[in-house]
Length: 332
Image (cartoon, rainbow, N blue to C red; front, side, top):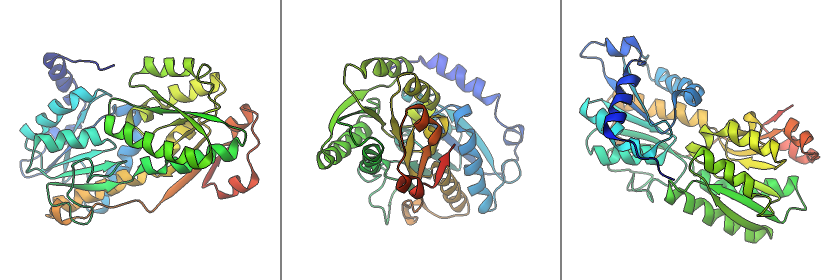
C-alpha cells in the first residue's frame, strides 16, 4: 500500500527536519561545501551507519562543521517523498548528493539533477537500474558502491537448509514498493531453491501493518522458515521482524547483521557499515575534485556470517559446529 503525502505536509516536514540540522552546518561560511544526504530511512535507525559515513569523510580530510556541512533529508520510509526531497537538495545547490542504502533514493537524485555529483550505495546492479553505464566507467554524474545483496540470497537460503535440514517450504519476504529489487530477489531465490529442492512462497509487505499480516499468514503458507529480502524498509523494521519471528517461532534469515543483532536467527551479506564508510570516502574524493564518471563503481570485499545463538536455543535448534566455526560473529 502506498501512502500519499501532500506537498504542504512534506514541506512542513522539511522545515521540521531543518530544525534538527547541526548548527555548524546551518551557520557555515559561504565557501564551505555542503553535502546533501538523501535517505529512505529515519534518523534513529540510521545512527550507526551515519557514524561510518562520517568516518569515511574524515579519512578524506573532511570533518562536519569544520570544513564541510551536511544537510539531511529523511524520507521516513516513504518512497513518494524522495523526489521532492531530492529536488529540494538540488534547489539548495549542494556540492554532492550522498544516497546510501536505497536505489530508490539514488534514482530520485539522478532524476533531479544531471550535474550535481551523486554517490550511491545500493544492493543491486547500478547498470540495470540506470545509475551507471558500466561498473568500470559510470560515465554520468553518479557512482558509488554496489553490494549485490540480491545475489547473496542463494547463500542465505543454503544457511537455512543447514540449520533446518528437514525444511521443505521457505517463505520469502520482498517489498513491492521497489518492484525491480523485489523481482531480482525473487528470481535469485527461486533459482537457488530449485537447486536445493525447496519450495518457495513469495510474500509482499511495504508497511508495518503488512508485515504483521505476513506473519499471520505463515501458518497458512506452511512455511518452515522465512528469508527476508534485503531492503532498507525491512532494515528499518528489523525490531518488528525479530519480535514477530520470535512470537511465531519462525527461523528467519536476512542479508545484514542488523537483523541478527535485533534477534533474527542468521544473516549473511556485506557489511552495511563498511558500505556507508566507503560512500563517505567517495563523497570526500568528489569534494576534492574527482568526477563521478572517472570513479569506478566499487564492489564489496567483506562478507559477514552472523548467527544469533540465543535465538537458535529459543527455537530449539542445534547449530552445527562446522557452521559456528565459519561464523564471523556468534551472538550468545
